[in-house]
Picture 1 (cartoon, rainbow, N blue to C red):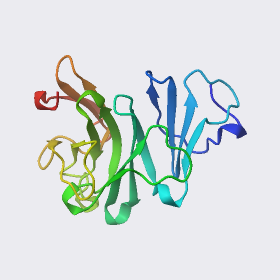
Picture 2: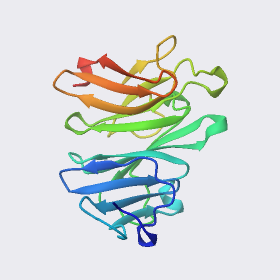
Picture 3: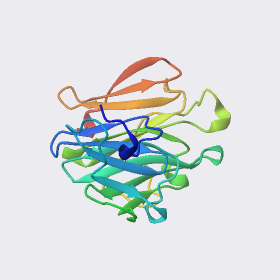
Picture 4: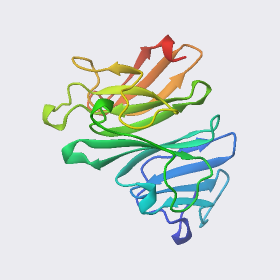
Length: 201
């Protein structure tokens, strides 16, 4: 258990584990905290991404890409106006550091981001995206796949779901390389859906 004032934990919602570098990454609304995987008790983070240059605002989730040494972050600059983003940092960045890449803009389709997952061997970023906020229950929600080399207003390489699809509010995302599938948990559906997407693998 990691708990106490030195941890700087205030409103944690999700975590990601880096088994290669033995670290745990915890997103907070305006910062990213990194701890040793075996930390226990009132332990200070070993790295903190925080400050105006980081562009971290309304952070929702973070994922580690240990293959490409990156931290991937999804969040929403303005949820009411459908302004969302994906930020890419170097894994060892610390302090008030600018992201090395920012994916956002109308062509991305990022109206509201939630879950994020990396698939390091191919350099993919998988992001759960709600449909427009005025289309409850979010018809048009999808999981988008971007490259870690993408930057700017870039459309996803692939989308899973989309208009008239079953996804409503995709949250958790995982990949199964052996079976070439992507697994998505959906808050509205109260279900886990499995999609066969061999092109991603």
